[in-house]
Image (cartoon, rainbow, N blue to C red; front, side, top):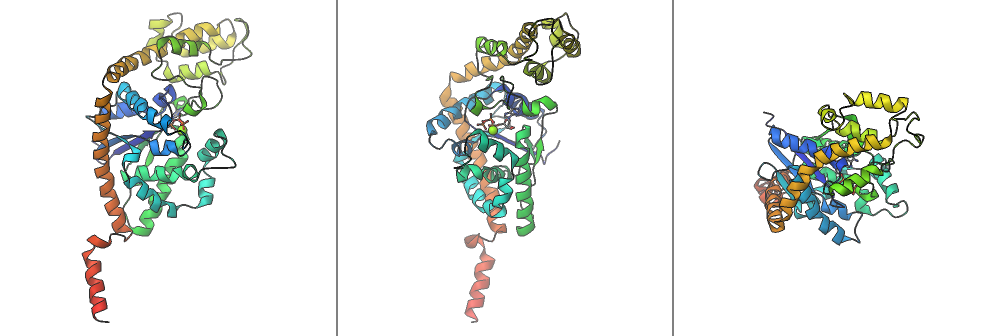
Length: 364
Ligand code: ATP
Ligand code: MG
């Protein structure tokens, strides 16, 4: 048992969760949870972070908190085994972010490639909210407040975890060993690190509207798969097809398992055979899309069924979140005690400080 392992991840409640989240992080979290090889595991809904670029739309964030919570439960996260909480309910995280701000330079934040891409995506070039610009710092606080060792996430989070590691290291260097340097846990399967959207352009992202959501109906999923971007040069069935940038094949790389062939496409033994045939020419996109649709439906159906069950009792989901917030707050408060002590801002519980100063002033 890795009894020192503390796992932590979060998602922004800017929309329901999609299959990019699922292969990039959520599925792995459920596996880690069920393996049980950890001391503690936290999963949180990053509503305060979502507000940094949705400040004029609090209703969107509020409505999506429950959507993300339902997606968690539907995907198999279990509040009896792990702690699920809402970021804004843990004020210690703001406090820690405030101290962390002094450990990072503006130019360091400007160099963060994910922030650069996201600023472009949101059209923020000329007017970046300070909170958005500094979100890697608050994310470092989220991670460090729980002393997370392991952060299962997609590739876009790599610069964030590096930033958190630097902050923890700098803090420890200045104030003494207090915080833990985290490690990112990327998906084992390369294509799952950054699943593209159904338009085949950028990564699948809630903010870009190019997603297949976990909670979508079978019909909606099928429609999206059938409209997916493939190879623009593959016009007639007999034309040779290309795999490069072909989103249908990228999704097959992410989701296809050997036993899918016997179940849904016995003409082939494995994905390599399908790819070879497609590249030679003579295999139509529709057949490949149908196969992908079958695979996605098999993966998503149990999630859909579980979600429908949890949707029947929304107050119970809020009770679960409230309990999770209380548990999380205790842990963060403990870390903040240690942080304040290390930073020498724990005036009232530092009896040695008070008596030393009392002596010094008495002998003046
Ligand atoms: P937003 O557009 O609001 O930033 P998002 O779709 O990027 O939303 P996040 O909440 O930022 O989702 O990301 C949550 C987690 O899911 C992170 O660990 C992130 O790395 C992972 N993730 C998000 N999109 C993908 C993707 N397309 N492929 C793989 N992992 C992803
Ligand atoms: Mg994101």
